[in-house]
Amino acid sequence: MYPLHRENHLVERIGWLRAAVLGANDGIISTASLVVGVAAAAKSANEVLVAGVAGLVAGAMSMAAGEYVSVSSQSDTEKADMARERRELAEQPEAELAELTQIYVERGVEPALARKVAEQMTARDAFEAHSRDELGLAGHMIARPVQAALTSAVTFATGAAVPLLLALVVPAGSIGWAVSGGSLVCLALLGSIGAVVGGAGIVKPTLRVTFWGAIAMAATWAIGALVGHQV
Image (cartoon, rainbow, N blue to C red; front, side, top):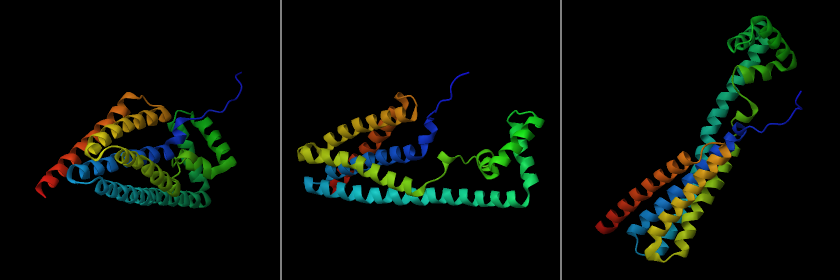
């Protein structure tokens, strides 16, 4: 008989990890792309920095608002489902017990045993059992709008600070190349960290985020150079 132990599952991190990786990734890519694009068209480093700071503030607020709205919509749906489940448990307890029994049968439990399990789970906490096994709403999967919004805003600003710092410390004529190279390195590092924290392989996430970051910066550089020469 093995002693009981506490397992820390990686899926428990998915709520904040998704918002954190998305926020930092967007912060680096969008701000670096903006800085590179403006650097290709602008004549002074001040213009580049003003655009970069504006992009950081606007991006952080946009990420926070977007995450809050989208996750709030998810939360509203979850709450509606849970309210309906509470009502059905109060009005049709036997039908809900039969439904829970069938869920366990479909998962491979013999009908008689499934009935006993359903009865015991119902006796312990009927709502928790139905929330988890019928609706799929485990505690670590519940939508948390404020947490998602704050995480996205902070991580976006942190990521956006990288290209801005690079633009501050390099000569004006080298901003484009320095920001592009430094940001790609940071994106690769971010992809690796996200993969490790999430328990995934490192190579694919790292290549994926670096590739799309390079595409974004190349596109804004080309547009900035074209517009700058035309104007």
